[in-house]
Length: 448
Image (cartoon, rainbow, N blue to C red):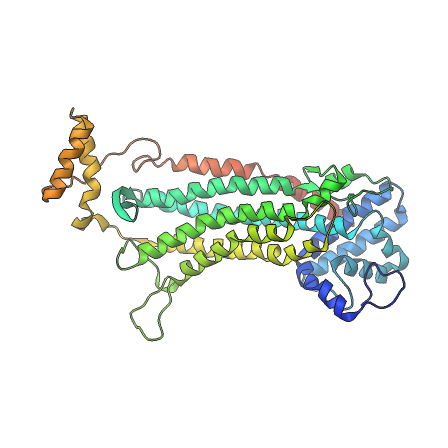
């Protein structure tokens, strides 16, 4: 293998080559589309600043568009004797157009290329995550509205506490996802800054127009300081991993609830037959494996930030090969979270609540607070009412009045699901997806 930085010396030691390249070819296949988009923007800028002729730009853009089409059709691969996706794209252009193809690397380093690819990849995959979270949120709010009048016991310390409802339960997780979306938006905003032009981390003596590539690729702004641009490698992955972990935390907690509520000891919900698995020896078993796997996978995703931090947290400024290791952790995480969101959305859409949970007298004590409050409203001091009801419970004389009336915002009788939906919608509307689409589509059309 002849590495991209080869200067005409000896062939690379195959053992060193295998070790240093690692899984880069596999990981870079996920970045291929974005590497081509970045190259299209870069060479368009090179032509504007006089580092590429007009007669060279058009065929190179056409060649890159051809490669992009092959990527989208699944017909692109990185040759075994090529180090990474950047080298493969350049090699294919060189094969098409000769020496002209080698000019696309002017003013760039693999450092800012891979960082650009990661940012373009990340903002695209975060968009998919946003859409998947929205779908789950819509299902949760729909179920909350549908079952708003179905009561179930609320718990503290895993002891029955006060009346809750399926409206509250479903709606709580919808609002949790809305807050998680704030972390996703923050991670997206930090990601959506252009590093291209930082080269190896110290800029270039070429008169690069970084504002132009920022606009061509639909970034909000650029990472201005070229040293800091390279410092965002690792920081980018860590910040996004935090957002992914926030979503995973909500889903893990929901999965635990579902496993608990589905057990025979609780019996609060029933899962559809196709959503459970059986046992090899116990014919009665209907196991909530989907939620159990969801819990485990979400816990693994919550560890992602820590794993990335352990690779990057003691590095000084400048680029180091350590960063390569973050790809193997970071890039697959998006598929994992999307898969989890798809399954949880399906499960929550098809879950069947028990409509008669509170007919069981063992749950009567959860209405004790309601009785205390009624006595207070009739004029009895709270402490006296509390003691009175407590004594009735101790003697077995407490009679539960299950006609409850909660009216304040966010309570059983006033779920505020419309407000939760508006909160989610406002955050989603703040993402500049349309502007990014317009920029990328214009860049691709420029090759026609």
